[in-house]
Image (cartoon, rainbow, N blue to C red; front, side):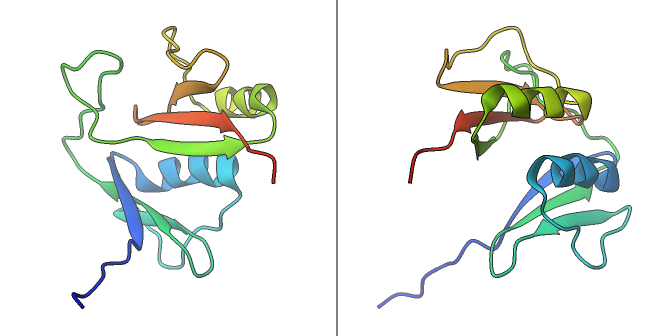
Amino acid sequence: MPPRMRLTAVTLDCVDPLALATFYQRATGLPLAEGSDGEFAGLAREGGLLIGFQRVDDYQPPRWPGQTVPQQFHLDFAVDDLDQAESMLLESGAVKPQWQPGGDRWRVFLDPAGHPFCLTRSRPR
């Protein structure tokens, strides 16, 4: 049987890793990873995926929905209350683009570094 890869981290480029980590920390409640600094910061879930933020001096944010600087991927987050989460994110520095392709199913935002991400309603368990 071939070896299996296990995803351990997703890392976003940005100008200020600690600032972007703080934005996502407020949004997710995940703790700041030990050793986070101005070059690399992370948010870690116990036994789970690390969301990392690495400093890139000439970072250019994606242009969404346009593709002059295309997005490479985006993050999706589930929340219980879309309106409440939207308010918190906007207060924290997110931007809600005018074009919203998801209708009532999901909402697109841009984080403070310009990365698109989506919110969707949590599914009942």
